[in-house]
Length: 249
Image 1: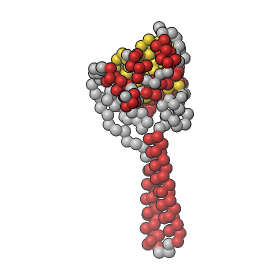
Image 2: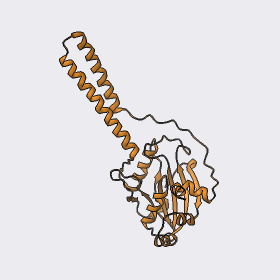
Image 3: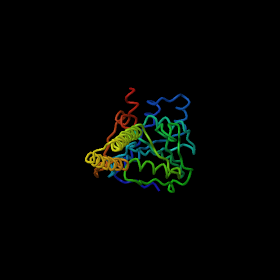
Image 4: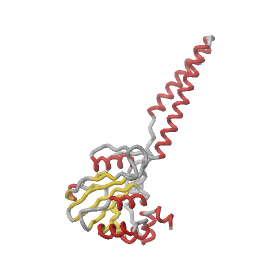
């Protein structure tokens, strides 16, 4: 079942016209959008503002949308365009009568998680769909959503995480070089007192590199806020749901 915290509920109907008017739809995709999609509801907003959760390195917000269909079919290109223009990581629940499936389109460009990737469940009774929050930060929550959709663990990556990883690798290289330098000095040093000093420096350096290797980011403290109360007109809706479009206007 779809089991998300009450504090994350938004339940706002999105005007269909907003999507095909402001998004870069071709005439053929516009006809598909009108013909296949009956309505779109912004169901949930999962973020630091709506529940107690630690921030992720790659994921800062997750939006859940329910899309009602006119028939039991949806063109994946429609979801890819919606996903591209939505600033948040998005999960789509599509419904036709009592049937449903959960879909997620990739946002990243690292490893196997690419922009043109679309993960989805099979069609099943809507009440049998599974989507629940598991994890201590938003990265873990999103990865577990992907696992609930695909049945497989799919790691996420982005430029920020790649940068952090690169910086850590460079720091480790410098620390290792410093250890080799101390070891070389010990081999050439003849004064016993100086050798003792270098031995102590070597011990400290090895302890520091070991600690740095296993170090993890300390989670940021979050809090329990009140449920979101959104009063949206059309332009505010566009700004919240499609910030990339607003920037183009």
